[in-house]
Image 1 (tube, one colour):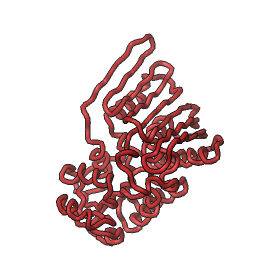
Image 2 (cartoon, one colour; image 1 turned 180 degrees about the horizontal axis):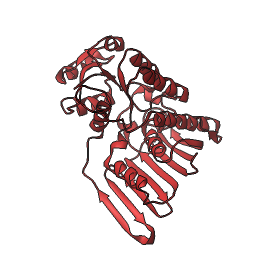
Image 3 (tube, helix red, strand yellow; image 1 turned 180 degrees about the vertical axis):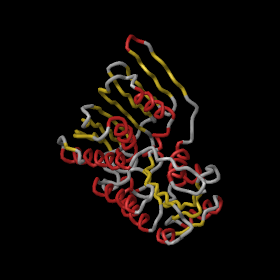
Length: 328
């Protein structure tokens, strides 16, 4: 059992804790770090986690093998580097960083110390996305030609923290909340991006914003794609991969539609899974532990870094209102 510490105990940190603590057979949270110790003390005690206000306390604890970061985005890179220097494996909630340079710096710190780095992209673990990638890799689609995606939800209305309203923390409308998951899906399917054109249409700023972001991407492989996100609308997820022989579409967490040439259609429906626990368990399986064979985390470090290169280019395209190249 991996002994871990949860850093950040806000809305999403609590979701992670409830999904893992007492549910996972591979990892448990021995400690949790929160600035709101008085507020969070009862829940931490209920879940069997030692509560601290200081990240440094966790880094100095030799019993802690890994940290799970559920902190504001701008803190991620420095916290990953600090954890790596302290010899802790790192699971970081998305986005891994806000710039390509910071993503590379964080990844290099973990690699240099021989530590596992994982990023929290729980949509990778949705049954629909697992099946979509399986079909895309099978060759049944023929040559991949085009990608489409959309991910919107109501979280800006229901779950709001002041830092999420900061352009420095959450640039480009819903990009850090929802679009980053489409970036991960696209990067995993088509590889590194080459260029991007993006825009945000906003009708209301501040708490509970009203905006929509649209992104057009060209990949180095020659594939093109586009995706969009709306920060305040009923939840909707779609990733669609078009090939010259078939197309495959993931709708929500559990539904896949495969359309063949000639009009034949196959539909797949899967039982739900706890995608948060699935991603944390995948992280735990990647950590060496006596008597257990490790399994690589399903998102590679190059994919993590390439995803942030595309993320940064989208932000820059929106700011400049110009097509933008993606760093390699």
